Each structure stands twice: as C-alpha cells, then as structure tokens.
Length: 51
Image 1 (cartoon, rainbow, N blue to C red):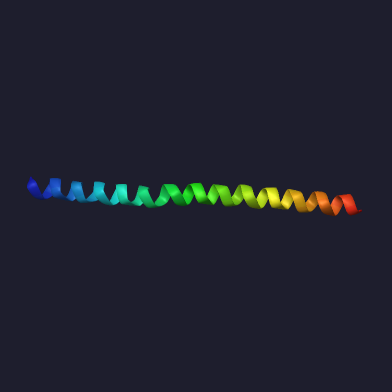
Image 2 (cartoon, rainbow, N blue to C red):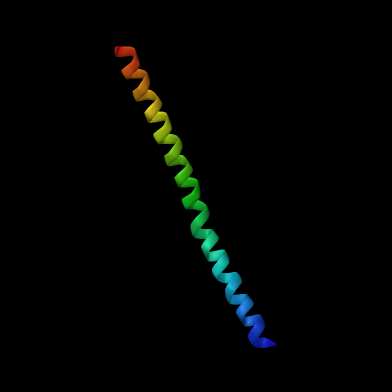
C-alpha cells in the first residue's frame, strides 16, 4: 500500500511542477500572439493609407 501512495505522490508533484512551468508560458504565448496581431494591424493600416 505504501508504494502505491508514493507513486501517486510523485505523479502529483510532477503534475504541479508541469503546471508551474506551463501556465506562465501560456500567458506569455497569448501576449505574444496579441502583440503580433496588433503589429500586423498597424502595418496594414499604414500600407493602406499610402495607397
């Protein structure tokens, strides 16, 4: 019984560690996507205004 609970404990620790890494990366990824979309929109407006 002890070995089974130790395995679950390790699995939970690795899951938490993965979430600690994944959540900030997900937030930065979304920030980057929005930044690129805004940059693309700005460039398109400048190009269209010169036509």
